[in-house]
Image 1 (tube, rainbow, N blue to C red):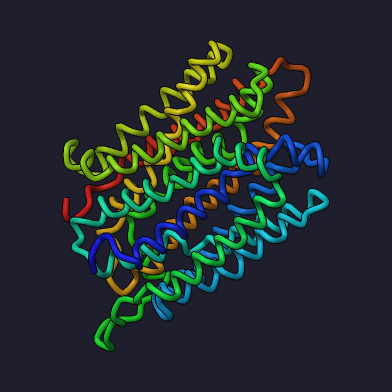
Image 2 (image 1 turned 90 degrees about the vertical axis):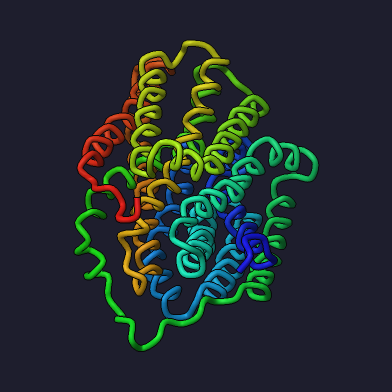
Length: 396
């Protein structure tokens, strides 16, 4: 299968929508607050519902990839959950409607990345997996960019409800393209063992990866999708356009970083070493934000952009883990790892809400966000230390 084809393009578009839907609440928060009375707490819950629903779907999605194939798995879920969730969002009149819509969107987006990863793992050489995984995440991360300043411009032009109706139509069209163009890899023969999730859980190396996997992407996703806007607004008085530019910069950093995954891994001597260096850098940036959250708007925007690079760690971790997965368990393996990563985002979304409320009691905005950034730094540091025990991948 060629790298660039109608099949791959349709899958990239599906993942672009997944990236968009997980992050677009950041710029919608002012208008949703005005029209629906949605508070920061409400939006944190809505955002968390996307990630929890997404994570809960990973085990059934893994089974479906191994038994049904990526074409129908991606097309059906994206069409029903993705387009349906966008439509409910467009009709919302109360904050709880947003919770339902975001849960449906999480279900619809749940196979958007795992479908192409399954194809890459089955159809391409193992040595190419890292570059392909990074390219998919990098290209799909354009959804993060579309969910920043471009979404602000669209809302200004036609209104947020009309924008969501348009997105529902686009999502349905992409699902149809996946159904039309994607071809499933050849089924494994009867000589391959069927395996189970229990067999996968016996791989010791994966357990050592899980703590960092659960927190590293959560740092970027939670801060960009939930806390960047209130941080800039409360500490610096930033308006929607400044927030849009800041989240756009975070999205661009993620795109660029993911395209560099393959070259960086080759230059630095493997995915494991690359991830350790990248995580150490993220920890340094979080420490700077925690200890000087009020150091200046420009510096804050630069540091937030560097946080966007933390999203790059996901593709690197999947590259490190891929050689440990048996061929007959690729579908369930990649979705299990994805479940841990996305569940980590959901948990951190929910957990950050009471931390924010507790910190806001009697403290200044810079003190509040200092504690919030520290909340993300501590578990990232723990996961980083455990990751030192992981072995190199068999083919590195």
